[in-house]
Image 1 (cartoon, rainbow, N blue to C red):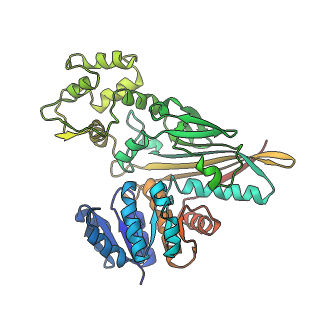
Image 2 (image 1 turned 60 degrees about the vertical axis):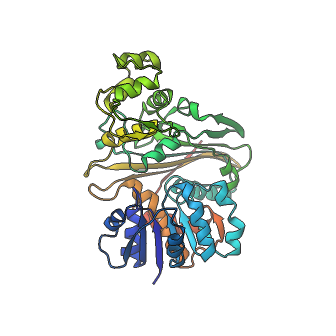
Length: 440
């Protein structure tokens, strides 16, 4: 019987655990900082085992890894390296949904030498987006075409019927992950020319975009996409853009949040006997919380009835009530407020959108080819985000254990031996791209 160790019991882990226990019949060791969270996901199934574990418990990590045939690491990205080194030590394959860090990339030769695969970037974004794009790119190449432009979009949002708060957003994955992503600079290419977007200007680089058959959104650039020129086998003069989708108005509000330094997660403060109004006043360099809303209007240079000011007011940043955490960073206060007001109710649905659009040059014409995936959550059940993130990783884990994926080293899921069977099974599970081709 195959043995899987799943590290982390957060927002998106449950569908993978269910897949391993119920579909594959594997033995699953599931870890969490709090054992009861892992026990909840195991749900008394006999082949599941819940373990309390933190990253500083290296001896316990060694034991968990040495007893597993494969490790799926669903913990924060910065913690993957100790796990990867334990997997190298015990010659255990590893799967993550996170971007490949420079430190992870450095382990490629050793993983090859140890004859194991460390497969990364196999979630929703990155993951489904890049597998869908690579499939279309490979098809164009086999048809004697050249990809001259690629635009890729990803989103995790409330479904339209449950988009019922001013922000147009609810948390279906790590709240601090959302904050950290908002502090990450971006780069995209226009006909091979590098366009730099500093982190502080990220949300100024927004554009409207219409997803055919779904709705209208705004997009802003997502990380540095230059590496995908090589990963996808594209020419140096290509245009390539990877963007996040949000409901209109998100970027203006994020610019206000950045101006108030609410994304800072580096300096801790004491908040005992501090109100939200006092806290917000301090962010603007004053101790006077009188007429705090007007002070924010003046500080942010916005109209009093603007959408962004209304969102900050709705969130509670101008309230005289006591801050509910005693100590933390500005970002901790923001996340705490957001989680109170921007979490999903039990019967509310989220949706995931993954879309790729390619412009391809053929000998006698051009084509626009698109692939669009829309997934909605199950009321009272798994979220769309949890399925879109963890199921590709779970399917790849099964394929590795069954010997269907032969690659060794540190990899992304961009070879046909990985993306073809993963996308095929994802389609069987109801998560697939609707394809369309238009001659230009």
